[in-house]
Image (cartoon, rainbow, N blue to C red; front, side, top):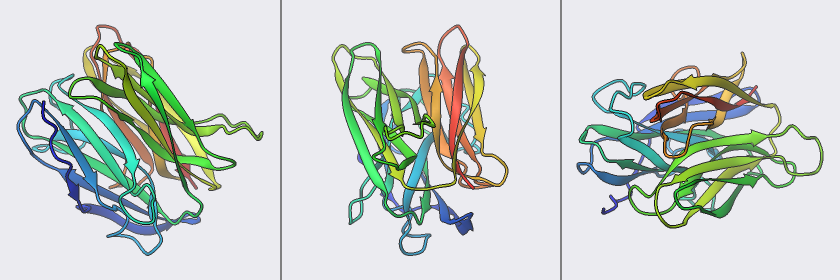
Length: 297
């Protein structure tokens, strides 16, 4: 199956630039409607989402992506479960000097619904001393594999993501989230974990990405949920009162090959204090999960 070309587009919506606590933040969104008819794998990426709606010096801190029906509200994802999912959602460098200044989304759509659109949302801020770190691993064939990458030194994780290699229908991301152990010692304990289901008969490359920075005033929160059998589940992690979302993600205990991730992204339109996820439970049993949010006061 041919890979659709990468689409680089400017932000089409922005919540603007404001001072949140001791950080200057901007929340931006993009959409990529239509495209070649399915079944297909397609890419969506935004060139420098922080550049067109923010002051000089702002860079991307975190981001996420979603798949939705372009004929309906973006928060609604009514297409049949298990028909479209995210393969990879990860930060990439598209501007100089090198920095993670775009969210890149890869999605597989095997349905007959050509109206499905892709979109991403980025959180930008005036944070110095960022690091963009990665770690590679080979996923086991016909199995689930997780790769974790730690932030260097005393830096804390703000955002991240993961890249799953291989052709159409070979791999899909099923979880992607920050971790923070709260350990005050010298051992790195902040970072990102990325989990894929390898559906193919050969090992594939996967890469976890983390955006880290020496930022104070962060809280790492999560909310649990139950995913009903053979249903799509929408879940949210709210930040504590007076705090604003920077990053976030999803973990769960769903079975291999029985989960597909439709959306994981920040609230870039309203109060900027939630992380959203949508996932499909393809099994005949419910499972538990958690939505994670990185918040800043």
